[in-house]
Length: 430
Image (cartoon, rainbow, N blue to C red):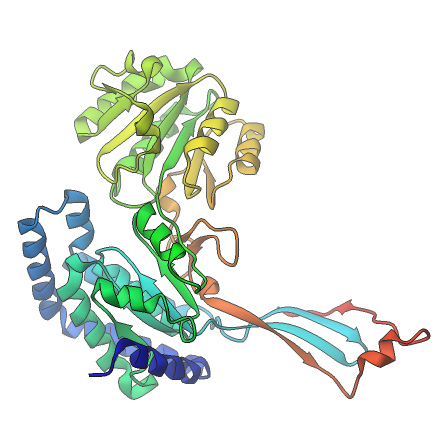
């Protein structure tokens, strides 16, 4: 069997071929994968059943078990996501800028696939389907390393995807790896891998960044906050906070901290306490909040920096929007933070001053998602400030080239004392 470096070298060659395929070809491959997933539904569920059985035996947390499940609904959603990817415009070859340097001397900035992307992600089989679909649609080859808890599911899904697409785009665009040793080797292959996107704990993402020379984008913790302002519509605030925390508590965009202005705390927090109690949410409240929430536990300093990923959160009463923004600046992971307010000035301040990839007003933090943004799902959410930020969809998997089309021009013509001048005329490019 070929070693990992040889396989990734082949993937690099496959990426070059995939990058020049037509839009119709990549759509055809995605459609074939969609059909293959439905045809192999029972085999996928059986592989997933084995993973769940092994995970339960090993004492895996409920949060990870929830992510690990690949039910009929999740299979259907994964297929629907692929179908929606097919309907999106081709991301390859789009002109971002077009400029005439001199009459007939045209410069373009055009999109191209990044090349080979290594995705290291958590125990979510549905994430594998999303990532593979986005890679193929964007013309990128991909190395997939999922959580060990999903090993059987991921192995089968990768094989189904490869077999379904081989006659259309070849086999050398997707590679699944499984061991920790493979990850360490992968991080040394900067000659063949163009980008690494890790998804997981803060310590794991930091490990990846510290052990590779390959560019890395991604996020670690999802410590997301919702601030309920003194001018909030409390009738809207209650369902927004509940949705942010409970709609899918294991997600990285679920709220972990609720900040409440002191002027509305006495009215809002008892109602929230009642609803959270019904839903089984464990609350850690500060000294001011706990008086309004008899079911709460006293909060410690560590609670403000905790990503619970479960029906658990921390609640703090603040004296002003300034204190709310300051708290977020100190404790946020720069993922997603939201304000609930009817004060447009407060909303604009929050938008301007909260330094997160996603900043929302009067809606749930759970909207921070590539599918919901209309990006065609996502490979992850990036909290970095370069290349891609927020949900990374098709556009985030593209790079650009500057293309200059001349007619014999030389720099000497423009740099001489009485040389020609650039006129840098912007041209339509949509």
